[in-house]
Every structure is written in C-alpha cells, then in structure tokens.
Length: 284
Image (tube, rainbow, N blue to C red; front, side, top):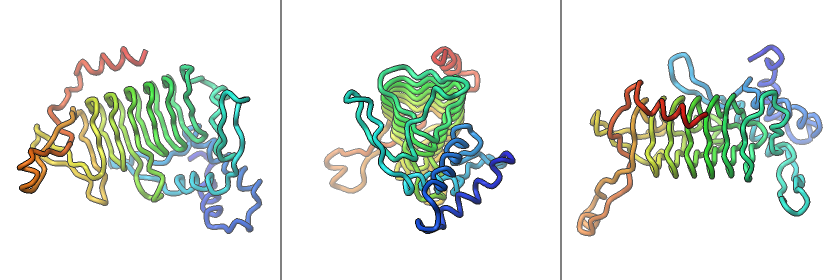
C-alpha cells in the first residue's frame, strides 16, 4: 500500500466501529469516496494471492464496501424518462470517462459500479454488470449478459463468455471471494459461485456450474474435489471441465434412473495448447 493510503485501513476500521452519531455523514462519505477510488485504481483489493500461492481475503476492504451501503442514501440517477434508476449515493455508477485509459465498453446497457478495478485492454460487451469491489485484470473479455459479483477477482486474459454468472461474496468479510486466475476460458452460461477458485489457464465448458456444494470428478487424476467449509472448491490449473452427471443414491433414484449434475474434468491442457492462440485472437 502506498504512503498516502497507509492510514486508510485504520480509518475504515474506526468508521466500522463507530456509532452513527459519532461521525458526521460528510466526513464518512469523503472517506468512502477515497476508499472507492483506491479500489478503482488497484491500490487496494478485496483479495490477493499470497507468496505461498494461496489466496486470502482482506476483510477490512469488504467492511469498507459494506460501509458504503450503511452510510449511503438513495439518490435519483435517472436520465429523463428513458433510463430511470436510483441507488445509494455512496455507490453511483463509475465515471469511466474520467479514467486515463478508457476501457472498451460497447454501447447497449452495461453498468460498472463504483469501486471496480478495470485493467488495460478490458473489453465489455452489452449488457453486462460489474459490481462493487470486483477486479477485472488486463486484456480480459466480458461478453454479453455477464454478471461479475461483488469482490470477484478476475485475472488477466480471461474470457467470460455470454451469460456467465460470477457470484459475489461480500459477507462474511473474511470469506474469500470467487477467484478466476489468469488465462481462464469460461464457456457460455457457466455459473461460478460461493468462493470457488478456478486455477490458471483452466477451461470451463458451456453450462458448467461450480458451487461449494458441488463435487468435481477428475477422470484424469481419479480424484474428487470439494469445498470443505474452510477451503473453497478449487479447479486445478489447466483443467478442462465439462458438465457431467452421477447416479443419485438410494433405491428410488436407481429405479427411476435419476442422476445429479456434476462437473467432470476430462483432460488437462498443455501450456502450448491452441486455446492460447484462440484466446489471443478473441481479445483483439
């Protein structure tokens, strides 16, 4: 953290502990504006990769986002009658025109909320929504009808295909958000929820759903991956995941031929896989 942000964490923690009548609203709002600007610049983030390779959440950052809701008041952001909405005045849509380097946001109904970091060369197709605290790193493609939830961390050169849902994990403050590492390709209509971590350069086939309660069967390594309450579901690096099914337990399920949806790892990509060339082409 840079010198001018060294005290930001302490101020957010003090504001979080203070009673409403102990802090003037203008003072709180000014602090939260500074906090959101730090998120947008990338100076702070909701979670980061540690030297040991593990991801860790920064609870104070999540508490800062929650303070924006607590201290905000509803404000009208409507444009005449053609585009009507109201939201907390502490969390307006981000003014992308104020950025030194404009992201490519194709017209058609996209909103990027305050407190979102957008890296260089990010492309956002309409309509899409990126919520507060999310981080979208360099050269990532966000296709149409994509939702990126609160605090989600999306790496470099990721492709989020049409109608992908990346869940937000704002509470509890100590919970790791959804993490999508560099070079991941996420197929159309995938859902990634509940603190799931998708490792570097993995591929999720269209329609894959990943949650804390969904086991993932690795046909290559003959393992089963699950979240265990302390650790999130982790998709290994370079894994190729497709929708699959497993037989439901119990005699009734067997008699009825019922099966449960489950993701299946069918192979592992090589670092020189043609996917890299395809991804590079699509990001131009």
